[in-house]
Length: 525
Image (cartoon, rainbow, N blue to C red):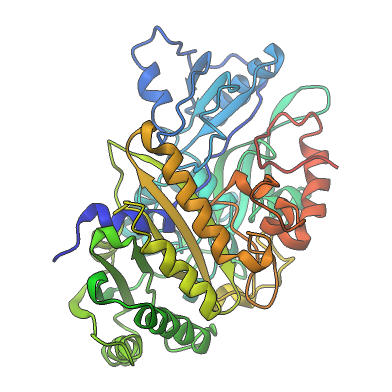
């Protein structure tokens, strides 16, 4: 297949990426996790686990957290010493919320990753250090179940779940937080005392649970585990507590040649995609299981692609896939190459079509937006201009369009902290490169293209008939900078819409000392 793995990675990795959870404090028990300082052989591996090499921190020490008691003790020790804390799960934070020069203590959660059934809470318990690949395999092989999480297998649940979480099955099963029953979290009170709390959908700490249904990482404490049970289920047995995984997936690829793509052809191609998902965006649509991220790589890559999958057991799945591909190529001349990838078992196909971890991550900048409907023609042409800019070479840089909505939209915007419940798609613009010497030109390209797309709304996705703000798991500190956000709308209203005041109240209650903070953290009220 004439698509490099790296070219595919440029667009699809961001579709599953998550905000790693920073900041936290701990209790008066003795931690079993040692302080791992610069002289320890483990130190460099721990501080360089981040997947965006624009940022590499130099904390005083790191701790490997292996229990909730470890987390409480480590947080308490750091608070007592007045040190700033960050927490790393999968390591996919897009900004320097973890790998920042002012972070003094790094709590690494990566080995705290068990996936089990908790009979006390009648929910699945998932350690906050688990990555999505572990979760998918454990739930599937253990019970034939899954969660509608992302397609980047190395992403940690720590930030992915708390920021909202979505993926290939979200149009059918909703956001990940629609299956979040509770969190176990280490918090710090006004007197500086750390303790662990379990907050669930139906106990006295429901407000803290709600804050983790889209409030994002690094705001309230250190999540040590997630309790997962689909809203509306009783938890009487594991088998009925999360979505059943499909038995098989049918998939295809459409490959487009940049050399033969004109502005008019690009406009028609992208408009076809938007039109289709606007017309098939209900929870009961026969296309609810269809997932088709459009990976619009820069023209220096030579081609771009549309990657599609559907539950093979959906009625008339083959016909639905063919009809979708026909809709995508309608009016497009020359037509793209269509590759039928056939049908395969669910987990195998999911692993094959997802992005695994890389041992040699590069540098990146990411900018995003929610869409209530397709972009205007001028916005699509702004994408075209950016992607065909001959003064820029970035074969792994891209604009990614991800179908969303469906079942997601059946939940009220204030039922969870994830407020965007009237959307059809997400857009993620990513610049990807390898060396520090290329930082300036890549950052400039990303900022220019994004500003051009949102020219009419001050350079950012201000909520209106088309836009619905942005996604906190794709954090972009530019949204808090008036040099790039010229709309007058504050960054927190773009991420949280009308839910921000409530998040502030919860922040003030559960983190009154503002122990847990970063550049886009929720501010106490």
